[in-house]
Length: 271
Image (cartoon, rainbow, N blue to C red; front, side):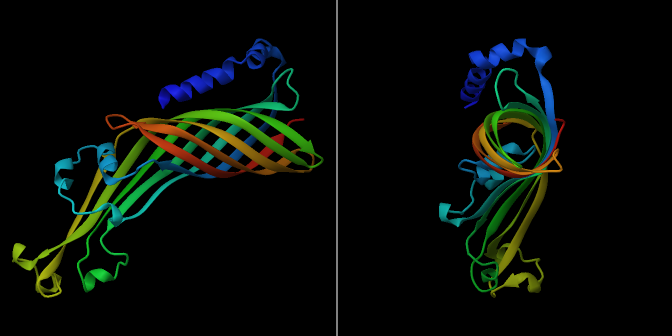
């Protein structure tokens, strides 16, 4: 996956029309500055608890080898990326209505979550067998991004479409693991009678917290958007991105991700 992304990026920046414009550096002019607020979904393919365990530091994976959760017990999962992006857009010399965006972006508390339940309701455990286990991981990311796009102007409306890529460094993460498993009361004779559920059973709770390994993430995407011009220079817009990439925590397997991103942009035009 990494090699595919690098090849695609190389093709983009080495195309004859693009390369010729690099030589005309003194003719490049900044067209606008913008700030973007987004809510991305980086969906990890085949996300499960075994991958989550490998991204954590100091976790004893052998303690989770005998879990009784079947595939149908996968209850829910999430991969969410609230982010902010600062962008400078340059007109590409010689290419009409073509812009090259350079951005610095930050993701705060990127959230990955997966949980397993033996029942569909949190209320069932009082009356029947019930077990669950959930993994909650958060991490921050800082990175650089570049997008080349075409612009179509329709009076006070701008339409955009293009291709881009980014590369970020993930850090400062933590993961919590919590759950419970129903066991017979005789396995723990010292428990208070109030902890015994259903006469012969009690709920054995588990909770722990770990640091998450640092890593890198790269994505390539297509982008479309629309912007509405106010007072000649102020533009308010909406962008949608669809792409793919990889996530590589140091010491953990490299996984593929699907990107679905929706964001709002405030742009100030210099001309």
